[in-house]
Length: 165
Ligand SMILES: [Zn+2]
Image 1 (spheres, rainbow, N blue to C red):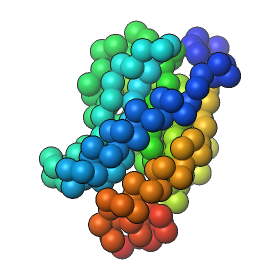
Image 2: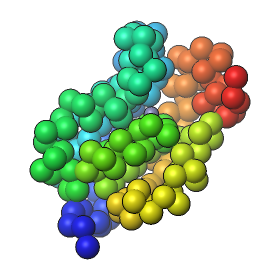
Image 3: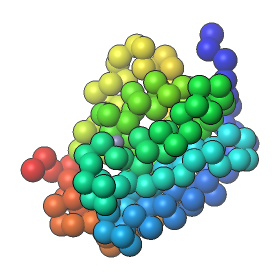
């Protein structure tokens, strides 16, 4: 059995998600997609980041991805005891990246109905057996409010309605 943190019962997910929401708001304020992520180990925040999709003109600079890049060395040793919080459910790129980065616990706010990555990829045993906890709906309303406030109409429809444009 893979070692690591399996019981998240004592963790106040809402308070860590608040950091991710703060990151998301910063992104929105600078004209980016309002999506944020934080990685924690115990009570320590290891990394926090947000989408720089527009700021860096990069389709792969998602919040989870850039948070991981900022602490991948740390995750090599401690990833299985960490939790990643993200305001929007990880996409088809970020979900395997999170697992590849050794993180086993994923908590998100708003579910992703655009890519439905968990549905699409959960059946891949290599990924499925490495995810200890996959929890959605934490501060979901706040995540939606940021999307409503800061997203372009096109991004809003993609995220909230799952419309492929
Ligand atoms: Zn992503």
